[in-house]
Image (cartoon, rainbow, N blue to C red; front, side, top):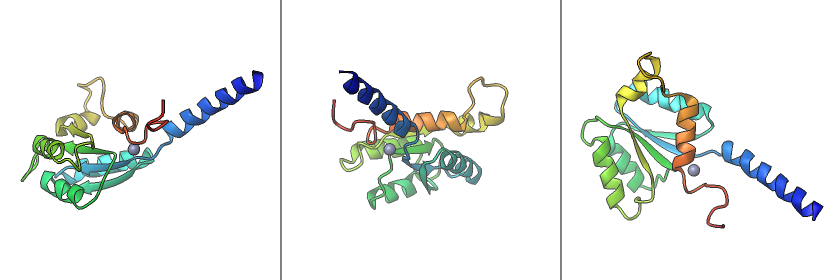
Length: 144
Ligand SMILES: [Zn+2]
């Protein structure tokens, strides 16, 4: 039994390691160049594959053309199609409905440099949000 126990412990360690180092694909949607590059840099630093769209309509085009990210990270206020409209459009499309859409307000991202908030966005926070949002790559897949 000692061997089985040891093997189990090793397996858990391996799973934990791969979960934290897991690369996800993220679609960043923002009409503001600065916010977009902040998010792209932060997520790339965290080891994820990042693609971008300049507004909700652009994002929807990309998704419907076959881009399937783990998670869509979108701004709220954008021309043509805003974050909520994008979120609703994704939820309504059976091909896309399983992709989580996280709406991030510009205010919250910009609060990165503001002392007013005690929990500013950081690379770590963004990374853990992506890890939590992605059900596709969750350790163990469909097995229990
Ligand atoms: Zn993923």
